[in-house]
Length: 243
Image (cartoon, rainbow, N blue to C red):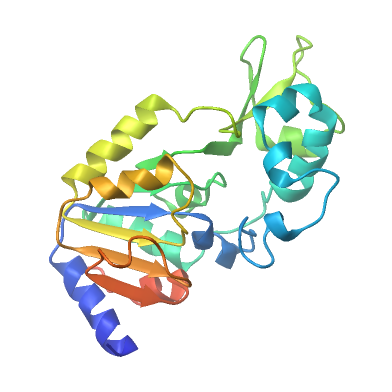
């Protein structure tokens, strides 16, 4: 099917839906200048003293916190990044009563910055940081502007509210995401390789007949999808008309 026909089909699917759920990953934010993890230029292909998977683990955080924060500040905090066309269109769809939830694997907060309200962050957010002792809250800018191990006024180590390797996803967020996906009359999957579990397993609970996948590369859900579009998600979603 030619590209124009695919975009027309996507528009028709959106027009016919009133409970759309968007499930997205790192590819949604790359157009905002935030690198993903698994592309050729992603973090997993860069060289550090330790592999990123090890650095971003719970064990590494507690055993080598200074090394963790050196990497974290350099490669995980993009506080000046701005929402792109994909973020803005999803917020527009929600405001129009068409989209019920954004389920995201991203931790950058760009969906909220664009205006989305019901954002289910499966892997947490860099914008929230807590003392591991007294639970006092700290802004991301505090982490960015400190050196070494950021500490609370009580002396405790501050930890980002992100799900590290070896940590479990928030059960409440998982349940909310599952409920939204099961209730959806359209599911749009975009900017994700669907290889990170258990998050990726959630899309398998969609039982409707309007499943659209928008990715630069193939995904495990392509064969099941009603529509697959290969391209930049910002351009594809940005082309949608919202009525």
